[in-house]
Length: 560
Image (cartoon, rainbow, N blue to C red; front, top):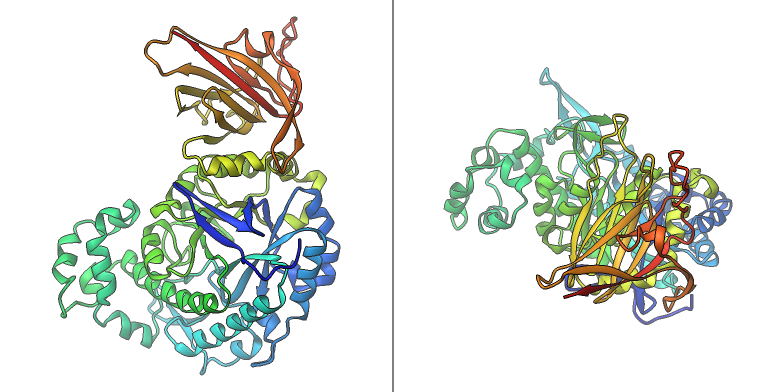
């Protein structure tokens, strides 16, 4: 990485997706997030970096906390982050810094001690229990400018430091806060919050919802069905009712109220930060999940999950009122992975998953994130407490890295790439991952589990159309069948099926390792990408072979 004063990292809008540019070229983030406290110590990280490199990681998501950089008001200390950035550069890694300022997982635990101890200057939001008694949430108020201004000042100092000192562009993105929203109640019950809640709803939000109704996610529409005509009535009126009168006395109303004000809070911080150093910004979202409450995830109602965070029910509000954030990013642990990816491509925003499962179940899913939804990143959390030899991501990331040239190129050609995964079969033998059907140019592709005589295993991969009749297959545990779309076609077949290895990942130069045919293609019926150990089921004729390079190129033909 050479020092540069030219272009800083930025996002480029493509026809149907986005790409991150770093050092003047597209960059595929193979990222992973550290445990919360790891990057508070450069000395601790000295024992971590090589293990991350060994996993195939090229980008590390790590926290920079308000309490660490401003332990005393007005006195800023960047020594630790300076050492961390220098070490990351030495190991050839990029960083995505997570600003733990006012909020982390719905709480304010990373605010400095001088903020925590002064509840007069920095008020906290209040919760109302079943008895009606108010309790202190411990969370900094989004309705008091003193909290915002103090956080904003520290964030601006961080941006100034990075702009001045990070000459090698080691830091490529910034996360603003972490999983914001109020836990313990659906909205703040303090007097100042009540006064705002009982005041007229701001005209900008009424106008936006009324005019953009058809474009809003169904999750929002379902919460407020039947309200469109009412909003249209007040969209140009100076006499708008208060929140309860307009939207109803409900938890969704409280959540909407909190989402609007959280979005404004983060927007003010992000907008000022971008004035200083305009690299990509995002914030992450704790996902709701009914009947799946966990320590740091799930929850079915606002307040059980952080009320006001950018869940699908209020994603449109965040996108509208926090425009300085390049994307609102889902953390996916408990939710349906595919459905969440689809929702967070809403309005064509960039897709980024800052946190997800670090096990094999999670690793398989990144192929769909990158291949089908053009994700910028799909990052497992808590990666530094796994050894590279034990991490499923080592295999996945090293393979993805080797073919990153093709992935980045395919992102620029709509409908030329698809990613997918297949989990283990259920105990009763049922399959929750049906075959995938996709059309690429003049061919319909059916992607299903790899052929075996016994029990099919899990799989994951990407298929990329290189030319009209040439396809790249990457991964394991699947097979692809091709059928020409022309009504005049009488036969579709496989012309060549070559196992490949990568000679030069920068240029995408591949070498043919062997020509596959016969049993490996079921005599031209399909291109089979087997698992490491395909189940032979004690068949006496051993015609299945194990995975090797996990990269193959297929040329097909059609007769008319």
